[in-house]
Image 1 (cartoon, rainbow, N blue to C red):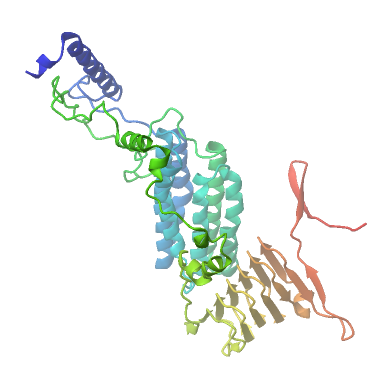
Image 2 (image 1 turned 45 degrees about the horizontal axis):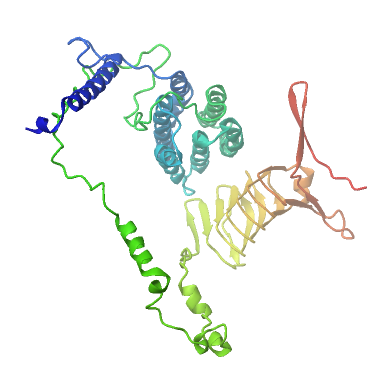
Length: 492
């Protein structure tokens, strides 16, 4: 009975459209070896990974698998951070599989595709525990996780060149600590650094100007959401796909199947049109007919007294804005855990002192403001992290004094330390002893500004000498090599 509602030409045209769509679907299914066009015993042809995905698998198998094996012989926290790093690598492989099959997504879809990699990177960073006896190992891997963020950068190779040194700094500390004692730790640090450098080479070769999306791909950004298979080696072959294929599409509905569905009326004025028609019908005077007349004594611009009383108070004005709660202050803490002292969240405390310093003791001072810490005697390592306007006086240090992410801080060495590392700081002043000057102390800086080194006075009649550490450099290419020198500003 429904076919009666359609004339012959309309029925034929609709059937032709349905047939064309079915033929298109069948041709696509035949192209992947499934569907009615394939033989009953024929399996779906496996889709090979893109060349840059295969290269990524080879990189992981060659340079990261040995790191995983070495980490199993270390403490559980080191093995755990390497396992988390491997999880981030797996998420990045899924991302690369998606890129090989899809066009570059828009900003909203890009955030969704990047989210699993970002969450995996954050998990690695969260495992950097300062209380661990292998903090340098954890920090090296956690800083290396930032290298996996190259997939969101337009020029990823230079980006990797900027972030690899942060991980390399902690790797150097591992090699300095274990050289001649345990070569397994030394090789672990070297292998991780080599992996990051190989990752940079891979990016230069396959993703010079960003991730190589497929310009002829689709928009199914869940193509790589399945769990990643084990990376195939050069001699191995990818696992075969499951036999069979997707079920055939359902048949099209009969003609006239949707004729009884109510459709919106195509004629008649809409609600907006009716509203404007009513306004136009009332005319210019009809629209304002019901408004109240305002006399001159009620007008604020003609009545100063009324204008003065109508000023909104500051408190009322501020109540309309969204108030942002300040982050809760963490309680100050000074405690010893094993052979390591932790001084955290101190404010304006100038009486901090470590009385039991020894060559096996280390000190970590973090997130302090306006405080002073004194460390008499000889100590193993000292670290100041995230402090502001804080001072530290160290008698003697066996390994190094590390200053990280600090502002307007002062460090004084009374006797000797072989190395001072300063990373991401601004306005730091280091006062050296005469022994540090005579025995050539090493000062390593990166991403810092306004750093000054104060040398002791040669006699009581002279003043100490304050020398700035250069911040500006000039690099030239000579004989195929980069030659970098400090920029010297000479006045007229």
